[in-house]
Length: 457
Image (tube, rainbow, N blue to C red):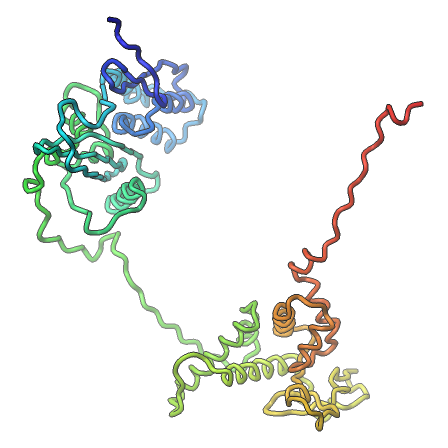
């Protein structure tokens, strides 16, 4: 009877006769440059990471060449090639390894327990992960086999071993799709941890047979009952106060003395927000905190009230008016004057017959006896070119469903009166992205030239 052929599965040779996987190592290295060396290492196709610790030494060599600064097509000097040539000389030994395709060995009874064990470890040169499937049959026989391995070189940027250990643990968790809990983690010393080989690498020579066996079949204690496994450390060593990985909590208090009505302070506060409602809420919390500092007996707790938001609105408008109409507040008698002053200034509020209430300018007008709300009879005056004014226009525009400028201005005037209001509203609405998309004109298709057959007699 003829022997069954050797087939390929996912780039790995499958010995159908022995039902085992083998590695195939090519000899495609043309020149000893970084580009050709990397191509040769990448030719070892190993999707499940069975050969991860055997390839890690070559990855370290490539990383060192990158750190020194050799170009991709620059020939590597002889003094840098000794380790590479030694690794490449021993690499064909990898083809002699046979990895059983079936996790359940021949003669194994009915499986009673299936366990998945993930190991992670790190060193200054790299970090890695090894996952093993532990089977127990009805007779109590135990068998372990490698499921998957990963091995990566440490970053060029220097990192401490504890941080690399955490990086390796993160890779181990990702293998099982983040399904992990603290109660599942145990400490395993390096002498029993098979992932130690994934972080340090394994040289393919006769003296490393024990390491190769541990890599493919797991730690020795996995083949024993759980009662005989190594115990966990009882006392954890104290962390040195100067340890680099110790995260320190620093508390700093900065006290800045400034004028509470300073223009720069309030300007930064008002321009920090892009939402009228968020600005109202923030100022309302500041007012409540001010009352707390004054130890008021009527200190409120809980969420903000409508009354507090109304007080915040009044304070914001007072600040905006004092920064936009300083001359009107300095000389109230000049507001109604139709003649320019010595500097040629004429107040833009002269036709509004403004009146001052609680430090805020309101429109006077002739609607004192109108059956409407006090806010609608005497709305608060706002300047045309101010960030807060634009926030208010944007707020009403979005609140009313992106309606046109006339309707937005009508809603705003129930509470505010903007100088040159219609032009201001049009300017703000003109920058609305949603309105520009909804009102955009469809593109016109440009007709292509007629073909020669249609224009030639």
